Amino acid sequence: MSILVVIAAAALAHLAITSPNGDVSGGWTLNAEQLRIGITRTMYPFFAGLLLSRVAKPTRIRHAFLWCTLLIAAVLYMPRIGGAEHLWMNGLYESICIIVVFPLIVYLGASGIIHSRTEQKICRFLGDISYPLYLVHYPLVYFYVAWISNNKGTTIIQAWPYALAILAGSIVLAYAALKWYDEPVRKWLRKKIG
Image 1 (tube, rainbow, N blue to C red):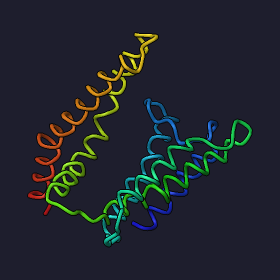
Image 2 (tube, rainbow, N blue to C red):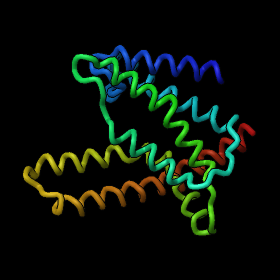
Image 3 (cartoon, helix red, strand yellow):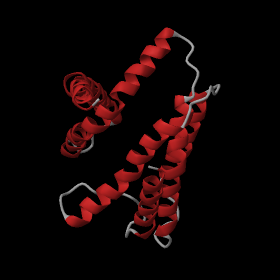
């Protein structure tokens, strides 16, 4: 698994640094180039997540939520670097974020200290819906983008209720996918394989 993670990291860095835009964007359509981009950009997070879950033993880190928040804010505060003349710099930056910073955030989050039963339930719920949410949110975001595009001149005050509706809808759809598909399929697979 470690070798596969290293190969996937190298492929991701190569894609990001050598891409025409200096990033890992793409993989949204079904042609050879976009499929290569999509597979390359998802291989590392998938295999690194598996490896991290198998070998990393979370510790107890105080203020883990704060550290995770600061790291995410730092990454989002600087979304692109290098400019049009040095696109490779942004590719290197995105590679470092994906290969180093994001797994660190996951580890810190897993090592956070939970103080109450309520916090434990919230964390369990968010952890349970995280992957289904990842899978279902994008089509709903497209509805929001289409609405904004069709309603030029929309203010943030007018758009806010629609954004909240998309957020709530994404969470509800992710929970439904978790309960009606993900958990039953995993249970069935455990019976068949395990």
